[in-house]
Length: 86
Image (cartoon, rainbow, N blue to C red; front, side):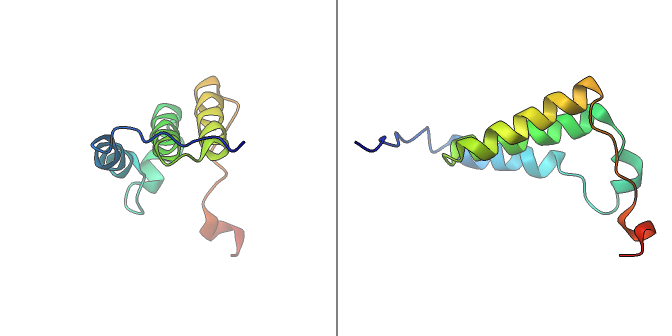
């Protein structure tokens, strides 16, 4: 028997998306925020919330784990992609 996907409150979808958009690091902010553990964790939590609301449980767990890793200091800025010759 397949699991039934119970819809979550549809009003939450645009709110969660707005939160993700507000926390996502854009190109202008990259150098200032790329190493901010708190900002990177918040961005990952917002991504995880969006994935959860869209029934993407595995992706949500990965994003939430990444948020915890940023907060603990287990993840670090990988450096500027432009400096890797790519």
